[in-house]
Amino acid sequence: MRHITITDMRVRIINVPVQATHSHGSGDVSAICSVVLELTADSGVTGWGEASPWPVFTGTAEASAAALNTHLRPHIIGANALRREQIMAMADKVVVRCSEAKAALEMALLDVAGKTLDLSVGQLIGGRRRDSVPVSFTVANPVFEEDMEIIAHLYGDGVRIFKLKTGFHDHAFDLMRLEKIRETYGDGVDLRIDYNQGLKAVDAIRTLRDMEPFRLGFIEQPTPRDNLEAMAAISAAIDTPLMADESVFNPREALVATQMRLADIYSLKVMKSGGIARAQEIAAIAGAAGVGVYGGCMFETGLAHLAGAHLVSTLPEIDLGCEFYMPSFYAKDDILAEPFPIRNGSVHIPDEPGLGIEIDRDKLEKYTVETLPAAG
Ligand SMILES: [Mg+2]
Image 1 (cartoon, protein in one colour):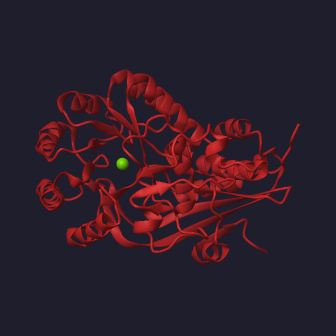
Image 2 (cartoon, protein in one colour):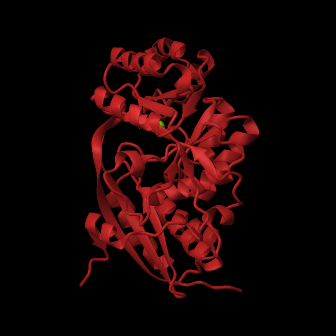
Image 3 (cartoon, protein in one colour):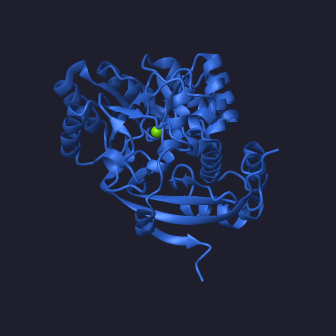
């Protein structure tokens, strides 16, 4: 039986600057703060993974780094990288939650396995059904004029999907921005909105009815994640498809959401589900119920985006596209050796072994703020 032993691992906390602050119903973001996991196998192969936490949404970089370096390290060193599900079951037993750390671990194991077996991650996880997926850009700059310039630029590059972050200022500001974009581009763009839980359940339905004339592709997570009843009530009351993001992290939550009919679409994110395999399980639950799925992301570098791109390449239905735009249109730089592959408004999924694009070690070093274990 083949055995690829993990012999070393390194955990780095990185900070990549971005072009502008992005505002959301649950807070502002002004940098990409991630945790990069490097696994080394006895064959000499290196695998890379990224945990991209957001404290108001999934967790903190410090928790991801500690989960990997302190709690999981003793179980990872010496493990057979090809026994991925066994390792992931161990991770669930050793550390509760920390889904981003687990996503990073699975990503790095897949990268090692793919490079070892000469298969892309997409081939390893079921085989790709498509080679590219349309990309959505997120409009979240509190200075809307700056976003209008970026939209014009991206429209020229072939991007046709735009998602506005709403609910971080006031309702009039949200209506003004939707009006302006529809006025400028008519039905030539697919417009969506995302509240990141920013609306109060008490008058959410009335607020959202104002949004329906803008012919939105979907409305994402208007109300707080735990108020499942509010989401179900909104979904039943409005015509626009409702997407659950913060309310659905894992297969168990997807099952409850499906039983309650609380949304028409689930946003899949490897950072929420703790990796690609669990995200595929959510997609299976959604598919069986006629619920749509979407390729979502957190504040990630191109590394985590590659995992998301391989995930969506395997899904039966991903009609709504994906939002893997960060290193191309938001971050000032990336840690990949080649640009994350967006062309003509679509993400083109790499077919090289593993995740498909190597890390630029100089850039990784440049953006590293802490390495674990510390040298010396
Ligand atoms: Mg969201």
